[in-house]
Structure formats: C-alpha cells, structure tokens
Image (cartoon, rainbow, N blue to C red; front, side, top):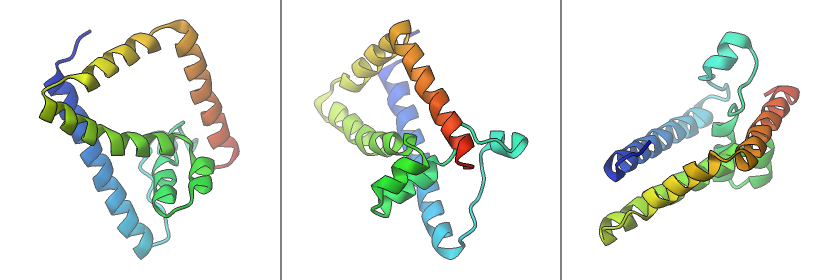
Length: 138
C-alpha cells in the first residue's frame, strides 16, 4: 500500500491541527472548569478506559511543566506531544527543500512495524499500557 506525499502530509497536518485545537480547548476548559470531558467512546460505552485514555491530560501535564505526571497519566502523551511538535516542522522542511524525507521515514516505519519481531513487542506495550490504565482507574 502506497500513499502519496501530498495525502500523507495533508493528513498529518490536519491531525496536528485537530490535536492543537483540542489541546487549546482543553487548556481553556481546564482553567474554567475542573471537571473533565470524556470523549472516549470506549470508556463511555464500557466504563473501561482504552489504551489511549488520558493522553490529553498527559500532554497538558507536559505543557504545565510536569513530565512525571505526564508519564504517569499516559506515556503515549509524551509520544503524541513529540509528534505534534516535530511533524509540522518536518513537513515544512520537506516542502522548502522539495524532498520526501518524512514519506520515506513513514514507509520504512510501516515496513518495520509489519515485522513480527517488532509488531508483537509493540502490541504487548499497548496491552500493558491498557492494563495500567484500567488498574489506576483512569
């Protein structure tokens, strides 16, 4: 399966913009009201947190300067924050230099993740994070 650079970059920029928008909304909502808004459909339907539950709170903890709380809330938040910072800059550099380094990295990463010796440990990490979210009552 191949994706064009334009489609990949558009998707990633839209995803980053949506993430920035949600974080801004959450930041302002967090300051105005201490109650949290649950948007996770899995948690709403089953009352069980999904593996990514707490990611927004994790990123907000990073923004507020508390990396340990961020890590405790959900380690995926640190990854997401990193991606949200790096991806737009990487796309801009590719655009300015007229290169496709992000597409090449994406393709190599997908190919690597399709290998069982990488995919299985990654799935185990997601499963462990999910169990951790459940046990800490996220």
